[in-house]
Amino acid sequence: MEIIFETIIILILQYPGAGIRWFISRLWKSDRNFKEFLKEDAFINGMVSLLFIAAIIVGINKLI
Image 1 (tube, rainbow, N blue to C red):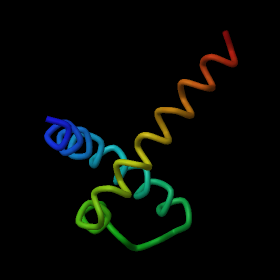
Image 2: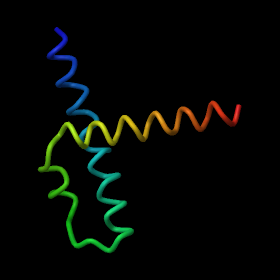
Image 3: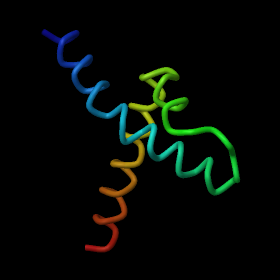
Image 4: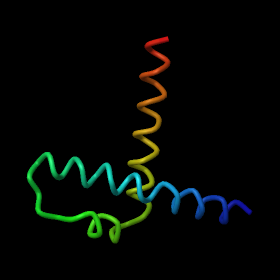
């Protein structure tokens, strides 16, 4: 059950993580496209997405 849950979470968070990495690379004027980031390791994209969500939650808690 745990393996299924981890796989689903990584697949769900893969797209936002790749989008965040793509956006940051665009700020640095990189020529890589979104599909290249999406084809890379899904775990990295998932972790980037989780870190971004955690940063948002911490930031909201600091404001409140």
